[in-house]
Amino acid sequence: MLLLIALAHSRMLHAGGLSMATPSGGGPLDVAVQWLLTSVVDGRAAPLFGLLFGYGLVQMTRRRSGPGGDSAQARRLIRRRGAWMIVFGVAHVVLLYSGDVIGAYGVFALMFAGAVSWSDRRLWTIAALTLVLGAAASAALQVVAGADTPLPVGPTLVDSAMLRASALPVVPIAGLAVMPSFLIGVWAGRMRVLEQPDRYRPLLRGVVLIGFPVAVLGAQPVALQAVGVWTPDTPEVGVVASAVFGATGVAGGLAFAAAIALVAVHINDRRGRVTNALVACGRRSMTFYIAQSPVWLVATEPSLLDLGGGLGAAAAAGVAVATWVVTVVIADVLRRTGRRGPAETLLRHLTYRPGPGHPRPALP
Image 1 (spheres, rainbow, N blue to C red):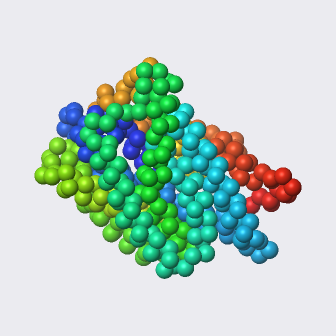
Image 2: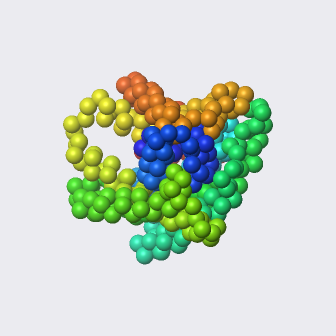
């Protein structure tokens, strides 16, 4: 899963930059890689993580609200966790990377801690509404960014940090794009879809068979611009293309989640070393999501490697894959030594730390 995030972030290293529709240049391999990533990864990886975050909140609530549990305490813990995630996200943006999603998920936790108890109708209605809002937000951000928006880097590390900090108000707006998948994740968590994939195999197969084609086809108005094959006749057509790209990204995120669940059913207990390492990385996803960011910082900073926009799409993707492989290896070392990810450990400590006059809640 974190491979998808790394590949999405690799666009900072080629000429396409922050604009989804700007060609990266280079040879046929670069063009093919950019088309593939724009069609399958860009705007499709983040909704996958949104779904998993919503699913995780249901599991957290269930652990707290079981026999003898307290649903009100569960909501308080979710909101506390969300508040600290916002702090993590702000620090991540200022220190390392402007495209953070941790803070946006923290906002979701604060706003929707009670969504676990909503009716199905309410969940799906709000998800549909936020799908429209998220598509509009995605289109608006691409229009504002334009084709020539520079990376948020300055002459020095301090200048770059200030530029990233100035982009903080945009982070929640960008987060609208993953809110539908977050709410669908809440619904899926209540149904235990990912915990009981055998039971929901027909549903999961349907999501894969429908979700991936919808995501790929919906990406083509932007993907074809990204490889220089098509240019919108009017700005309005370009806006519609970006909106369709954003909306269909949710289908891609759902399809990725369903595909992973089906693969898990197939593997079952036949895990090898590679599978165990991948699972270890997934269980420490916050740590290794953040761990990718120093690579992008070092690679793009003018005072360091200054590679921003200087690589072809294929080489940039190679950097992303190499970064991900290193994080998987480190995650496996942590697994074999019985240690959690540092970010997860810190967030857990802050979430469950008792306030003044309150006993520490029992850890699940």
